[in-house]
Image (cartoon, rainbow, N blue to C red):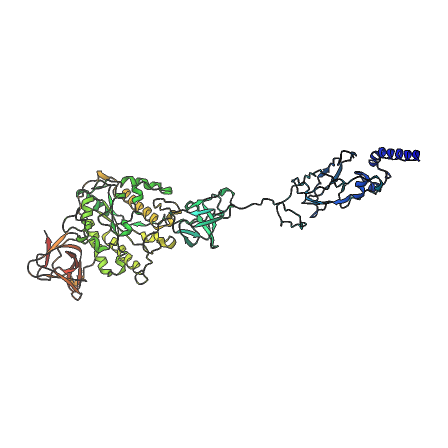
Length: 637
């Protein structure tokens, strides 16, 4: 019995020695390629092994597949079979899920993941040995592993496209998702309208030829979606969904414009810059200039006469301060140099305030001594005459009528304007009459602009003095060159009224400055060309308009007063002052005998009498010259 037990023990020992060798052998026939299987682990391990399946989550691309190599180290110091490497062709690896016994982990492309749990190796019991058939590999690649495998599979995937919808996986309850970073566009607007760029114009196409669809306020956020090739115009979207084109120079841009697509080509208008806005420059202007030279006027000086549009710091002051860009109008630089003065008070005329230009003024205002600066002007001197005496200009740029058109009778305006022109001529100053711009303020009176402009043109022709047709230039501009108030010329969003490019010349004040320089240039070239070397006058200038005398006044004594000068009522009875040059007009006051007054306009025939428009201590109206028997007024002194 002892010998039998010793025999059994010897057999068992031999089996234990052969087991490691037999476990690494393959007994399958050589021609059965599909049945070849790797043999892994101990018999007990084979008996308890489970199948691991790699599953693709989307169709495989046709590109040449990479390979993934799984190398499995031995699981135990006591069982050391040498396992072959298995090479598995992989068409595409997109988050495959590998399920192991008692452990779950996810293999993500480019990411190394370890199993969350690992089962301990089972205990070895010789009598429980049951040989099993090697497991079968399924669905492209199947690897049968022992529960004690601790190796980590490394996968090298194909580059994947980010296009297309995201793939949604259905993980088990223990699945922990792996989050991929996603692209987030730059937050916030890509541009803002600059803080000082109010009323920026939004156009339907790029360029100044585009229709204006809206005006935008300062600091408004915008999203840039396109541009012209030179990035001068940008296509933008507003927060409310509206879109259009704006000039890039008025924006604060927060992005690189070179990456923005070119979506349009600029179409610019030719603008009214080449319109002939100056006319009526004749030899009479030369005669007035030479007479002014004899009176001590300065050839290199001009002044302005008018209302707020003339007194505005937007008008010619940028030229005096050097804040201008002539662009294609470089020839005007000569006129700027010629007319830079100094004037009678030592100032540059482009940057000098005028005694005869104030906000809200009308033709009556510049002829009223009550409006003169008492610190500079003489007693009884009108602002107009004071300005001419103090600053001694050769030229006056005169634009009045915008305020007059609000209610002044047209014949009063005409008489006032004649008085202004006559005063200018008498003092040797070339009066340049400017038409007034369009007006969109009061529907009841806006239409009078055309009526008053006809009077301005007629006066310029009657006196043979230069005409500056500013209305014509403004009428060619968007919104007729007017600001939001419908009265004053518009200002570009950047406030640069001295820049003469196609963008800025769409606004009223840059156009006013350009055409004013054109007036001065023509006068310099055709009238004042010899400047300080011009001789004194030898022929007196024309002192009144050429007109047909009313037959009713032909038998009356010739009028003796001079517009711009002074007169007085002859001793005795007072002279009546009326609202119009007519005996039927309303009487507004009286001038006592020997009362001294300023002559504003006239003479004008009405109801068989000559009438003068006068200013007596602020009382402005019309008074009669006399009848066929005597004069009621006389020159003074």
